[in-house]
Amino acid sequence: MIEDQIKKANIEAMKNKDSVARAFYSVLMNKIMLEKIARRETGKEFGDADVSNIIQKVIKELAEEKENYAKVGNAEQVSNITRQIEIASAYLPKMLSSEEIKKIILSLPDKTIPNVMKHFKANYNGQVDMRLVQEVLKGIQ
Image (cartoon, rainbow, N blue to C red; front, side):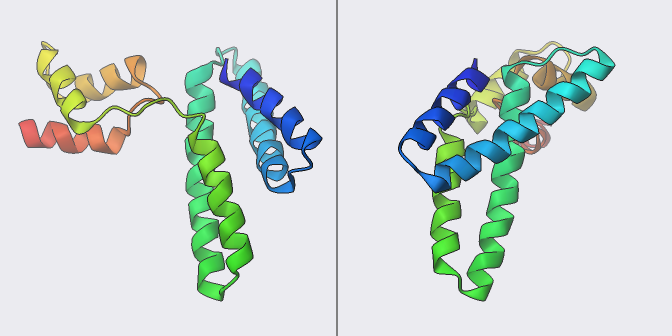
């Protein structure tokens, strides 16, 4: 499970006294724990796809933060955040390409937008950018 890999990497970062990686893992593990608690209250399952979604959100947040530091000229923070984004990206599954998405859409019997989006959300959650699915689908129709 991705969560176990993150915990092991966090321990390694502590052993190596890597403060940048350690800060990232702390934030990530905190967000995962909060999501698990929220899921437990609603009775929903929590799995690798959920961890991938959290990682994607963290990467977006880091990219915005990096942009802000770049605007004010803080090069040290920009390099730290760049490294954190690289660390986070290593835990994401390989994302589907436009061509792979197109093949999957063409193989579906019902190519309506709600049905296609529901199919990708159910079967490829965390492996695909839903915005890209929508763009490919519009290109087909």
